[in-house]
Amino acid sequence: MNNQVFFNEYLNRNHASLGNLINDLYAHVRSKLLVIRVDFIYRPEFRDQITIDIVNEHRARFLDNRRRNQTLFGDLLGYAWSLEHGSYRPQFNDSGNGFHHHFIFLFDGQRRGSDMKLGLAIANYFDTVITHGMSRSYVSNLDKEKFEEDGTLGIGSIAHNQISLRNNLLNHVAGYLTVGPLPDECSAITELFEGHRRFGRKQLPMPRPEGVARPGRPRSTEMK
Image 1: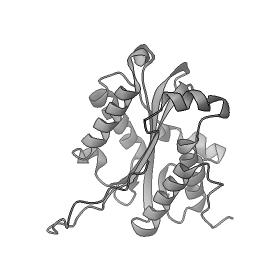
Image 2: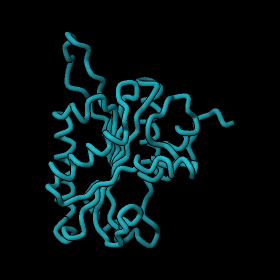
Image 3: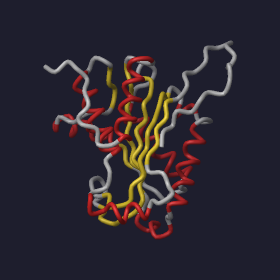
Image 4: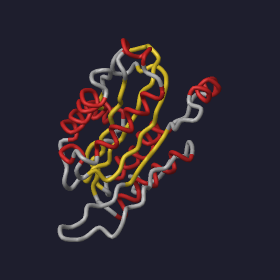
């Protein structure tokens, strides 16, 4: 049995950056992570109205509101997102093109459980509070049994010594989140996203113990 955490060849620097974040959390923060992946997809009837500026506004509001919503986002240690434009068929049998986000959330697995319940709550929050019904988000954790059968399970509760799950998290989950466009799509995608970010990740500061003053504003580690 392989007992060493590894990366497949990095697809790009975003894959390397996200992999480093995951490994850093295991090495220095927590021995168990609760990994949740949610895809934020816009409904077909609204896609003609959804510009990249609107998408960016929704993401910014969602991430800003996260700071004030400890019920959902307490014990969140880090996250990453990617923005794509294209079809989204796997879960909704939807062949139309449009913007959509892929998000992974890395929670403290020693304090949080019930990844499917938490993932559904995050999806519902985005769909109702952030986009007011313009989106219908999907929680990949609902398909854990399918991923386990395929040998690609890398979400849910993953301890530092569950090497196979960690490898899948690094290579399948992180790899999917950071894969670039196909060669024949590069020109169109580059023009569509010109001046806009397609990927971000952030490691969050650890909560302060009660009674300990904050020494100063924490440095952001979100990467472009």
